[in-house]
Length: 145
Ligand SMILES: Cc1cc2nc3c(=O)[nH]c(=O)nc-3n(C[C@H](O)[C@H](O)[C@H](O)COP(=O)(O)O)c2cc1C
Image 1: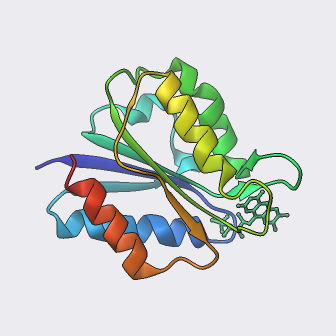
Image 2: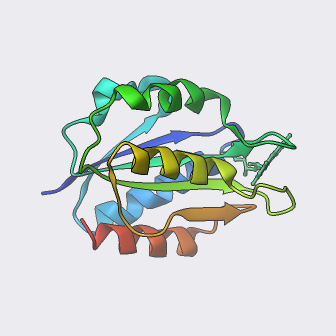
């Protein structure tokens, strides 16, 4: 059985809900899921999984700001051995802002820089999380593990 870790940072609960739907999609595909708030995760916790998914909402006005809790993990990703590791990124935002889901792009860029293998396109949720959309995305990622 494949093993996955889903790490999320969420202030008002939207990315947390998204992470739960992704977990549901993975479990439907018989993939073992560990779902964790980023407040409980350090780089040492990222190993031992077939795929790690990162979920983070975007804040800030004129520049991209990651969700507060996610910043320490983002900053320490340089210390993680991510070469060849399968990863995928999702997050919630609002397309009225200049940098729609900018945190998703920033995290994906850093993971690529660290040599991780980004699986599939990232998922950017505009407004409230839509269960069907998220389950569909998660199923697509699960099929590529
Ligand atoms: C002050 C403020 C700044 C925000 N900045 C952005 C932004 O730059 N880009 C974006 O896509 N969404 C932005 N958002 C929207 C949030 O990312 C969105 O509400 C998201 O659903 C929050 O997810 P969370 O509940 O998981 O934290 C902002 C929201 C607020 C209140």
